[in-house]
Length: 291
Image 1 (tube, one colour):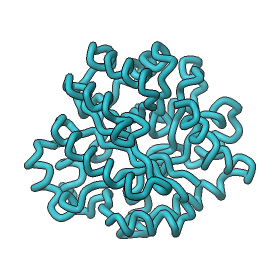
Image 2 (cartoon, one colour):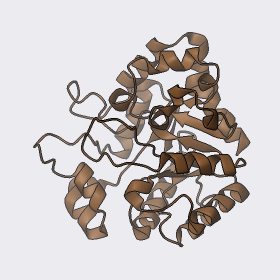
Image 3 (cartoon, helix red, strand yellow):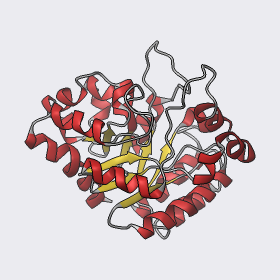
């Protein structure tokens, strides 16, 4: 059982999110997880290392993939990569991770080159709308060349194109991201959040063998029958990877703290036993084998 889209933030950030973000110039992070304008509790959880592993055990998740965050500044990426690298080396059987990079900075290429040595198996999660970069830039081209050479998968945040608004919703250059994936066919691309729900549209440009999707934050952005739709779709069923976006609180009305079990139970109850093995294990392990 693999959760291929989680995050893990520092204890310092949990103590005072606003001070932590402002010190590093992370204005988006400050807005997203700091004090909400509506006074409600932030949806972002900050579990300890012990609770993270405990929540995995309670849900029956044997392995979790920690996605990097789309930090706006290169220095934050370096700081967080050092922290996450140490974490996954402590628990190599339970955890793996993607490296944080900010493609607006040329130094991001250096991070990509050292990612494997630090224990990372991919790059991302990336968000061009927040990080202010172009998929058609020279820097991004260099990053993809490194990803190809180092066999690094790339996870990209895709925002759904709907009229629905929520705190932090920021548009992404989705067409450019898909175009880049079709150009760099030797790099595995994982488009998060069901590719902003485009995964359900049977678009030919998403059929490439190097393109996958993850189910992160299904409860917030995807159709209620998303997993059923995936199982019935011959192409999507081979491309969808299970992920929650933990420690995001996917059921804020039910739980004041982050947890994994409810989301996983929902997904398991939505699919057949045969497809469950494909969704929760096989599709992601196929990616790891190819990189």
